[in-house]
Length: 288
Image 1 (spheres, rainbow, N blue to C red):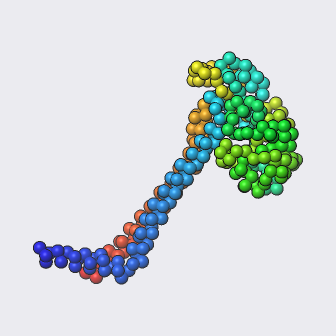
Image 2 (cartoon, one colour):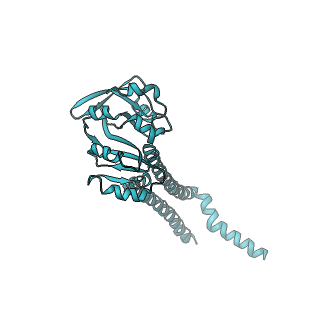
Image 3 (cartoon, rainbow, N blue to C red):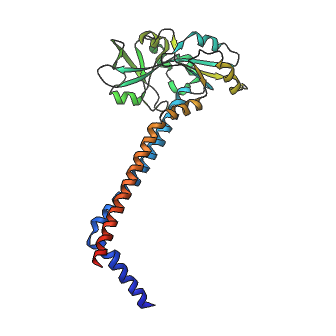
């Protein structure tokens, strides 16, 4: 029994341990190949999860306490839709908004500008604006704008600075009167008074979204179904959860590409392991 055990140990040492001892580079290459493939796969998974979480937070931050979000195409829809919808008996509060992805003058960056009615937004999206009671009058200035901390950091700007944006063929200078609450929106965002945004950014008579907060007891699904028939053909009425799901579907191809990249890295690591072990096996076979 003891002799058999010793013989097995000697055989293992000759077949496995000795080659690894004399050629540690192969073992290191195999371990690194597997480790890099697994690490990249985990990193891609974490990136995808973080991106989805950030997008969901962004959607729910903008929607606030809204039950229904009316969203139009990029060019928007007529603002008289707001007047009709806000008068519906099921609607408790309605907050109209203009959304523009503006190009920062002199840079390749774009900045999302949201035009809101601060009084309406306070009823539907109180966390987005936070406590700006001391800046309400300043916000009515056509040049006034509020930046999220992320946008201010990315652009290297602070309260009191001037932000130049490109509107068509002209440049418009806006005055930064303050920063949005850090917890309201962690991505790059800016807020203007809706009338100022429409006038300054050449969007007169247009809206991009209306956030609706319904009265208690209202059947959200039934109200949404009835509302769809009263909206322009290009407009949609969705819940914030559906909006988050739609945004996630838009990035699905990007996330699949990342997953495939991680799979290729893992397969490459596996091939390196196979190649090094196969070459080692051929060498040991020649020595036997």
